[in-house]
Length: 293
Figure 1 (cartoon, rainbow, N blue to C red):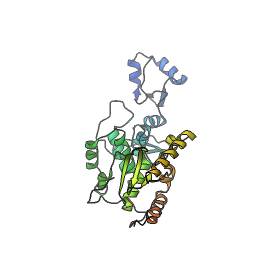
Figure 2: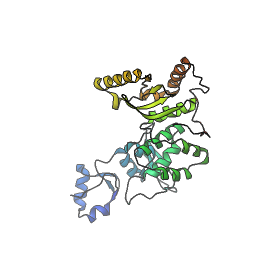
Figure 3: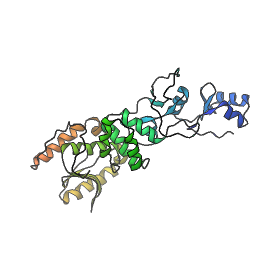
Figure 4: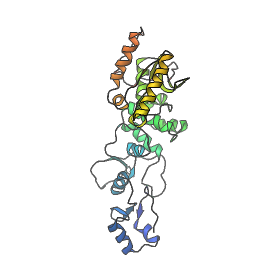
């Protein structure tokens, strides 16, 4: 049996050189043992929809589509993003496919159906709004898919108008919603620390102004009564130490970040803290002074 890789494209000659006859190849296609997205091109039958679409078009899976498959945070997942050669013409069209003609900076392995992570991140940084782009970069850095040197190189290829985002990337954020909260706190001008270990409580996502804990709750990590009960016990332990805790839902953070900002502002003003910026503030330019973020 010919051993195929789900992320690799095969041409007719590859199958013939593996000892498969034309009759056998035809039988495999008809029986579902191999997929043929276009004439003379074959892929593993269990290849993802994105890989099949890329093979059909004649390109490579890229941008937010590839990153999502790797577990990197992206804000939107609609459509399939496919990289095609910069001067490609007469491409096969497919509904739901978004084409990118940006030249690649790193060469993928031969016959690969995917661009390298570096190029996918570069494209995603340009393809998404600034907050979402930062959340994607934070996620990739946290997962170890890139390092600081990669980021420096990536931003050398970014248009000047977005290079200020480099100073805002922080791999300590473990999820997209955490990045959105971090940027919100920064825009509000509040001091904060992220991923703080509190004795008797454990590690929390944020401590704001030394007294407010923010935990970004998602269904994946906080579902079920046992998990919720453990969270409530942690909140009580934190309260005994003088902390207040809020647990905004991840989906709500992403859908309406300013709403969370208004909550934080209201709590801060209640204890006499002055907040000069509005929750609706966009991603700010890097500050000249160092912040704990």
